[in-house]
View 1 (cartoon, rainbow over the protein chains, first blue to last red):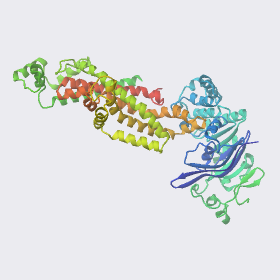
View 2: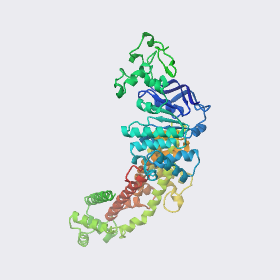
View 3: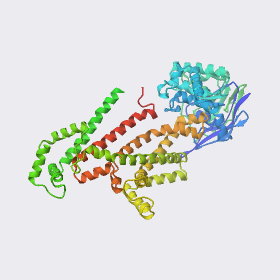
View 4: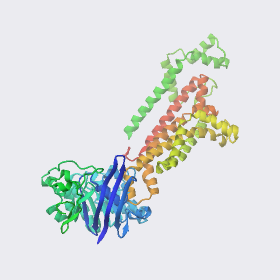
Length: 313
Length: 314
């Protein structure tokens, strides 16, 4: 069963230098109880895609396409109806917990807000639920910690607090943006374990955004590779790790330290003037003449694996 | 914390010593002898007449004014430390009483002007920030620029002309019932209101750009909740600093405004004592104004951690 289906989503920023096509004609599906990993290098549009879904981008962004969640198009919902979805049915775990938590409010209060807003609980009850949530994400002496402010938490604890805040109202879909970024390896492993458990127990679906392929391997059922605002490969996680189809996905995998740490030559293209034809062709080892002019469609390579490459068209 | 208080007290004493000694030595370096001024008041009761040499000599002996300035300052400071600021040359009343009598007038004026600036400036600032780049925003900003640019003595005269003389709605000058407060408060409050408005606008805009506001939106909070719980408390931090300084300034006596409106406050006392060369009163008033400033700064420093838990605390 499909829980969320993204159809032909575009998110463009109007800037003085021109239109930044951060998300360009992206279509994806997330099934119930499924975790989809969205991977790609920095600046490829992952975060913008995630923020577009709940319309959390700034006002100079133009978003169109369709984001169908349980039969409703989130992009067409009234602001008030959308507020009922945010944090209750779809939760967003933002990247960079230090700046994403309000410095002048206690962590406990910030976690209790979804309860106050969506379940209409009394302050004292919402507060004790927040303490429970902190316990759930394994923060020791949660009742005391709930009274503290974000700056009194360590990096790992702040990330846990963000996760607790996202999971508060048991959402059906969690959008997690780089949940392990900036944490050291042992803390990363703890967060991954925690998220695995929480997802398994709650039965929620998740869109996991990361540039860390090993994280995707541990948590995801499917993976989508994004390059220059487009999805270039979309595959079952097993098929993907057996052998990515798209040359960029292959290079991306080979750039991982455990697989040779081979850098990809060239630099990421501009999102204002992407190269014509295939956007990856200036950096691609398999590039053909045709690649310079023909924009490849996303085609099925084999069962459970799609790639946007002329090799398969 | 204890360390902090000790450090602060040290600075406190230093600022007091420097400011009072500066005033003391400046006053005594003015042309004309101190003893002569005193003799005028004591023997003649009139500043226009000149006392005889004998009379000046008598005063010098009685008040021990032949000593060095340093030792005179020392005895003034010791007495001041014990709460004795000396007596006014002009009225012979204790300086402390002269100040305390005028304090209520100044406090009333300052308090109401600051309250007015907060009650009007903050909502307008938030409104301008929420409706950024709209007509409302431009209108608020333009009014604020006007408010800041108008010299307050000019505004005072303008208000008197319009509201007292032409429309006869308010008393012109003087101290009495609530109606006497209107014009001085409006004059004093206008600039402060404008500054508060602009500061509120810019700090609210700054806060609205922060990631945690997006988090709050992501939780499904509505605009009102975001403004009140998430934005305001953060935006208040720079406003408190500014209002504290402004309040200190007003408590020190709005010298010009008090003079124009014949308002019997601290500022008026200072001006009167300067023109009468009433040295003990000038000294005492300056000491008092310095104290007020420092006490307010101290209070603000204590208030900070309440609004911003990252400051102080553990």
